[in-house]
Image (cartoon, helix red, strand yellow):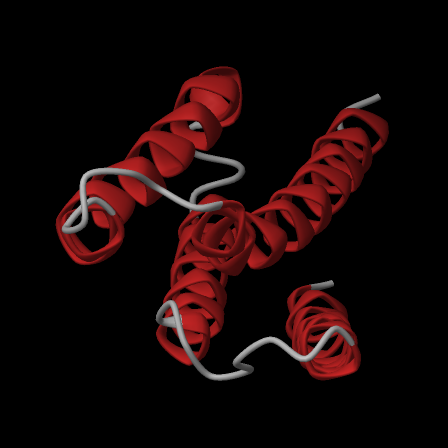
Length: 129
């Protein structure tokens, strides 16, 4: 299951990055502004690390998995406020392009993490019956 997660994570982030860049280009907007590359890379690394930890401790901490998952989301927001927010707010406001640069990859990762964590927990329940 972890290999599936990592491959799908890479594939979906590459596809969403390509689509994101294409939309920006099509609309005549700057394509590599707003820390977009850093955003995709940071979100990918955090999602991979969080899923790795969830998977590694799935049996030992099964009853705390929801809290660990939420802790991972909290960790992502800490990274957002440390690595992105100061730059985004440097002009006094956060534009829609800046918002999308971070939250598009964030949502892709969140969807995958949620799906695979749910699948992992379901497999744990079935294996204990």
